Length: 442
Image (tube, rainbow, N blue to C red; front, side, top):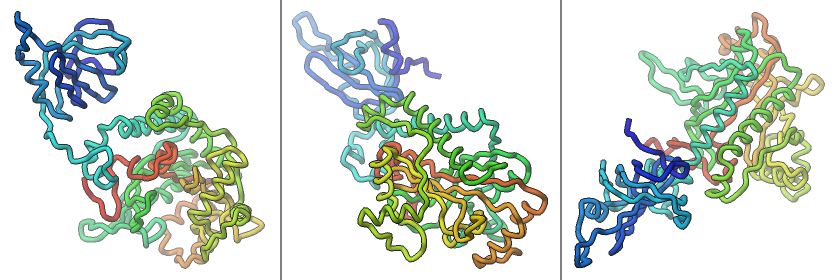
């Protein structure tokens, strides 16, 4: 390993010899002194090289000064010199007076993207785009968020599972599945770990979680859809209703937001320009029928032919919740059985409604959750009502033939959560390498 000091640690280091490595961000090649701003994965520092002069005061070329003159933005190098603390230095209050420069790689001078490049161009050159501190911070936040969630799950005795992504048959909707060659036959890429999460309940795991890839053959070109995404899933047994699932869901999100605020709050404020708010518990809960009435009272009629809410309706109800409760989250509950999967449990006193919810965050749906139907005879009946034959679902229905407790859970898109947390407009920003209908590279 290279013996180097991380730039973030320079402020707490003593004056004296130091070695740093990173990418050249800017060069100021002045007559009497040269400046190089060097950035590593933790921050940036100013390197200083006063030009050498002879007895007559004339500038004398040196190896270091010549190297600096030839540097291009993005070149990678290691610098050694004397660290000096100086509060007049705007960049971190420290600078390094150069002794040596060892250039590892020289970058092509003309960079293919600029500050004003469009999102698609930036995605073409994602490795350069991610050198921008604001963009790199997104994935540090993602790491903290996932770690906090995992800590919550582990501390509450959840079991982590890794479900297969190659499926013999459709898990939910055949219309949104990718078919792939599989030896002499075909397989499907999993669009959800739903059935296997429920299998874990029949196996007696009780509480489980998974963070893994999911695939949707959905030809959507919106700012919030992807064909491959990271799905955050959890399922729990011994519940009374979907209220238990919502309680888990909101506690998990609060744990994640608190961890992000504690570790990155100042950076978010500096680079994204707002203060991250940790949501309060409980999140507001509004039955879907009531939400539609509220939206209508605000002058918007949901134009859908089915019983679902549309994106503008979600934005309107989110605005209402923000105005009324000062909250960025809202659970829309009690969705119609006509638009929910066959395995969602229906209300005991009204089978037209389900024990389910969508979680809306800053006007966008980030998750669907529900209590699952665990009685096999009712599952068979509800499958038939959706045009499915129980024989096609025999492997799944077997989970329920040998005893399974009442259970429920949710699936949530990681990149959507990050997008909305950071007030960004496009899922591509919070996806390391985005996949959509027209993008399979890089």
